[in-house]
Length: 502
Image 1 (cartoon, one colour):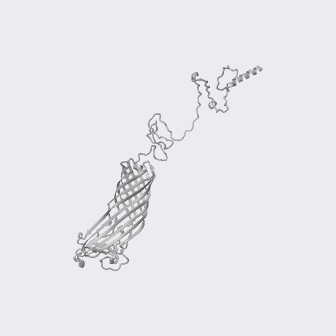
Image 2 (cartoon, rainbow, N blue to C red):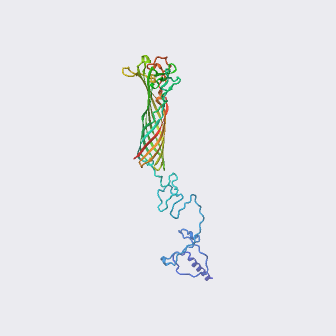
Image 3 (tube, rainbow, N blue to C red):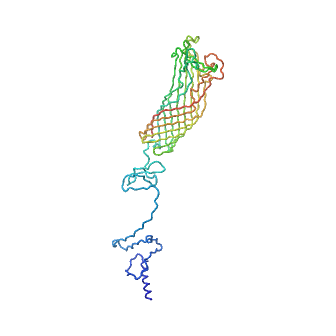
């Protein structure tokens, strides 16, 4: 019995000794034991990380004995890995990588977005759509080569333009008429004809515009611009010799008698004369603005402007007549006299201005749209003058008062009115170089509450105030009155110019 127990103990000692053995090789090979306790289960030594491969049932390669690999008969063979379970498929587009260099036909995902700025080294060059920064519309690699509109991020720029503009004409009343002989050619006379045009038109107008700007930061610039339109004159003249058998007269309404009447310039056998008028106009202005680049993306740019605007419109209408008495004039035969009426107006606008400038670039071409709105005060002033005097030497001095300009309305009169000045402009430019552009365009301006010479005339006259007129009944009230009527003005035209940046 003791021998049997002793044998079993030796067997257990030999069987479990290999289980706790370390890296050293066994000193001797033991024979097959008479009995076993089953397949050994590995333990985890204290302080050693768990061996998950062993726990899963993989075979552990034997430890290589000391020496070199040349001393080994062969290499250990690892066990077979189990097939892992199915993993969830992430959402989003599937990106495939070509096995051979070529053209990518699908989108290219760049991480982080927008960080790509050049070609991929060692890879194919994308030729299809490129997915870039989702916050912008620009593709990776930048926008098309910008024109001068997008290179103005610093420095000076200036433009010089030639202008061909048209200014709205203004209305005038009937100033000269013709009618049957000895009828007076009043507006109430049957068969009377008004000879003068209904408007004074000084078009077309030629001028120039100059602009100077400076970008003192990539987003801020200051810009000054001024334009000047050359004065132009509209003339009209008519002589009684053109109507030898008719009356030539200047019609007006009599405040004394309450009827239409006239002053005679020409009448068969009584008087002959000439009538003419000249209407002139001067127009100029300027503005000073700050310019802020609000949006600059690929081929488009939007700038905001704000500042000060000034406009000046000065006009005058001068009406003259010259009359000489003929034999039928009795005591006035041979007497020559001249009559002058002059109406001058001036409008000065001062106001604040806001606006926007949009530009789109297509290669060397630039398409621009400008919109502005100014609000402020227009100071209207009008000056009325009139003279009557003999023609020739020794005729005596001239006296104050003509026909439409008399002592009741002669003088200077003014008024301030609130005005709006909207303006739009279209331009098409071509970049000859990075610094030089040629362009052409169209602009339209509207100016409210403007005083013009035609609105200064009052046709209702007190005959007792007219120099040389016979006495008449007293008029009811004062006539003519100083008139400051307001109307709206438009200006439109084309422009041609060059832009230089330095």
